[in-house]
Image (cartoon, rainbow, N blue to C red; front, side, top):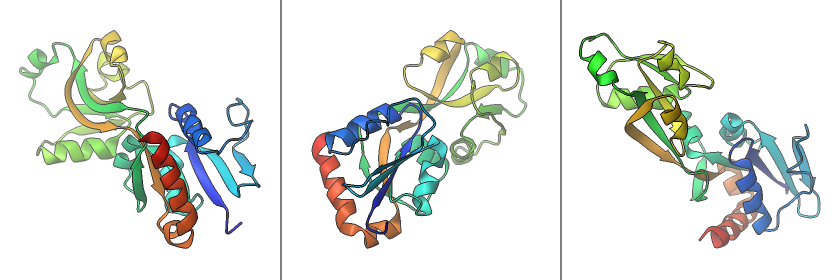
Length: 212
């Protein structure tokens, strides 16, 4: 399968739009949107293999060559920097990485000068953000439901991914600062860029034509 292209798609919030994008360039499989356990889909006529992987793992599959190409959120790429080529912003999946805290927390903080505790799913982004500000913080890594941490006294602030901000409001949190914005990105294995140059750039050009 040396002449095949393997494309890793991130499961979760980017998947539907990723499938729609591939459909626009003629890459589709009838079972992709079925909620089954199948994770691998071959398109022999096009010599293309599609993989469904955890969003956090997509850059790893691409970096190590298990996939030639992937679609990943910029938030994932910022969190765990990989040796990959990132040729395209795909213009969907927009969200923001933000620092947030409970409404009124600044009043309490003036009375308590102890080190801030930050709950987050993104310790890499968080550490870099506070390091650039010269601020030392204690971090607690959580896998989800980050908004609960301040309510339960687990953390003073959170660093999380938001789209509309409705969940923050529901938990009486306010945005203190926007750290970065995130959209879906096309990523490419560096070896595949050389060994499968023609196929890779044909696909890049096709995708460019439908997102421009």
